[in-house]
Image (cartoon, rainbow, N blue to C red; front, side, top):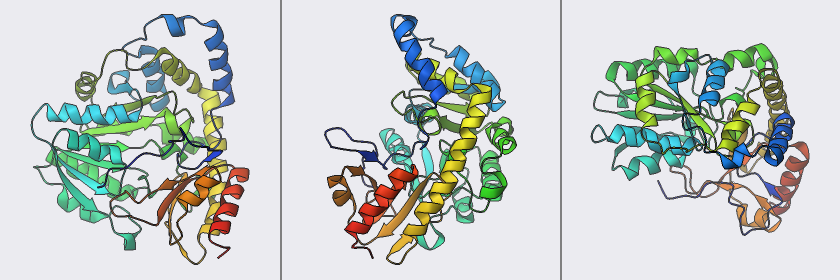
Length: 371
């Protein structure tokens, strides 16, 4: 897999709209923004005290939010820090062999390469829309130590079929394989066909947030983040839910003290307000449903190959070079040329607000001469 930059690198550029990062199009919740602004001006403890190294209050709130024991939760400076810590913890016990479906988020591979892991790539097929298939089960043999999965997968945006995920988790449990299931986008992902049934249903959302099932898999690490769901990438706040407390302890030992700032812990606690967060997630999913349909209508036209993803972003192919032309108009999208299995001509765009989406599509029409 070629070395690649992440989205969101707007520094040193004139950017008016950023479609390269897949954060919630609703933006930072108003109820969080107002509290943070007030605290930043009046609460000196945010700046003059060291952070709680155990993130005690935040982990307690997350345990209620997800219906899991507090001792199974580890917080980090973004999900990326936790990915690297998970791999380091595994490497302390000996050489690491990992199965990695591709294309996928580049930090999995970077962390594995840093410890000299033996990476066994599972190349997802374009004719199957880059979806994970039963073929991955053949790779999950006893000599494998780790498996990385994105649900939904980034950058292609598809959710893993529930029955297949169950089979993968059971196979890995049988063979002692640690599964890192990255669900940083899960609350914003709406499976095609379920929009009317449970896109914004609050009862469904509460069930989605309930991750008590993780305890059935002591080999599972579920990766989450405030970054995407609550649109706060600059705060840097991620966490993971481990299938058992011992795994959480080994992971915590790989992290530096005070790795999560006071501001990040306070922002996370504020976001988890039980009543307001469910309303916010419901509204967000409704917006994403509507705007994803709007974008798909254009991107499904001849000359483009749109993947049938479930996430709050869309991945598509076109023979027209888009990045440079859009950048001249202040619009940043994600060039997927560096992703193994995709290559030149593949792009990823976030689902944004209607005004932003209309601007993007007008510029794409201009660059493709309306075809």
